[in-house]
Image 1 (cartoon, rainbow, N blue to C red):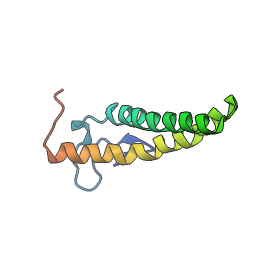
Image 2: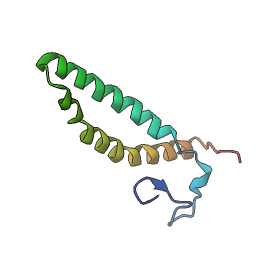
Image 3: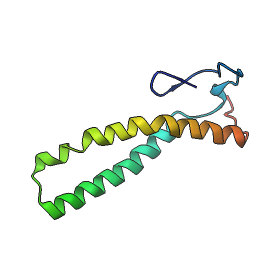
Length: 93
């Protein structure tokens, strides 16, 4: 279903279903950035308020946040394609 990390193949290798019919460009990434950003920002703000960390400590959760974004993008894109296929949603071109 995927080429590389998050690029969607043009078609399925097994059944030939064209994935270009489904729109998975920006939606999943925007949803993940918003959701994980709110959680990571809120957690950082809460920990900083309780522990009184210095400003350099705000950089520490960034690798975990970026890893969560990258690791969750593929399953979210696959879920979106499956839901669009099931609902018979097609992008008009």
